[in-house]
Image 1 (cartoon, rainbow, N blue to C red):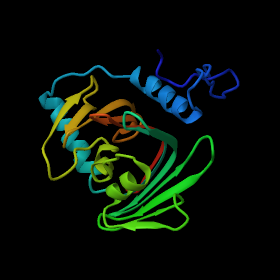
Image 2: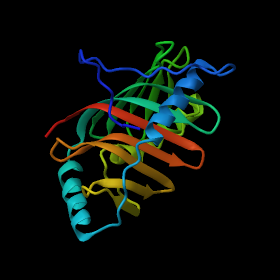
Image 3: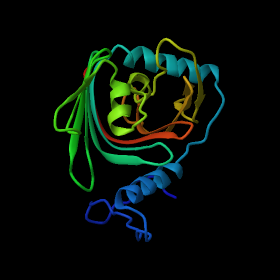
Image 4: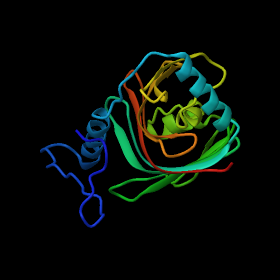
Amino acid sequence: MDCRNPVAKDGIHAVWAPAIPAGVTLSRFFVSVFVMVLSACAPVRVRETPAALAAQQAREARLAPLTHWTLTAHIGVSNGGDGGSGDLAWEQNGDAFRFTVRAPVTGKTWTLSGDASHAVLEGVDPQPDTGSDPQHLLSDRLGWDVPLANLRAWVRGLRAPDSSATVQYDEHDLPAVIEQDGWKVEYRDWFADRNPPLPRKVFASRADARVRMVIENWDVDD
């Protein structure tokens, strides 16, 4: 399967639209298609070499200090039973973040914002939900197991601080897999034209939990 987006002659992205099986809800169907597309795009993995390690350390030295960035992406989350997907806009400003998801079918939008010690979830319940742990709030109200603190590093192709990690690399000395804190993070594609490169497709899993992101755009403040 070609992992690139097919493009018609007029420049508009072509869309593959299979039939929806009987008895399958529309939201679960879209999550399943999202999983199949990403699962077909795993890169070739190679063991760590001195050159790959040096390249990763140079990327981390460039990107880790840049704490002001935004991305837009398609996101899919599942836990072995329930799941959800949508269009994601993620804004990071130091420790402060704003994580907005718009559902593809209903158009319903919710936003999680805050920092490492406080979070507000709006758009799920009639009144905003608040908590001291953003990850717990997201899990409690939506059932989404998303490692927000570590994902902040992983989404940029970096090892999260404060814990050990093992890394496998692709043929271009970019991370293919980061394993850390029980999570396996696979990098299916990169914006290789950026300097340094940034991930395009990120697939994180732990037990039944799955978080998949296809990033459309990066905006990083130097």
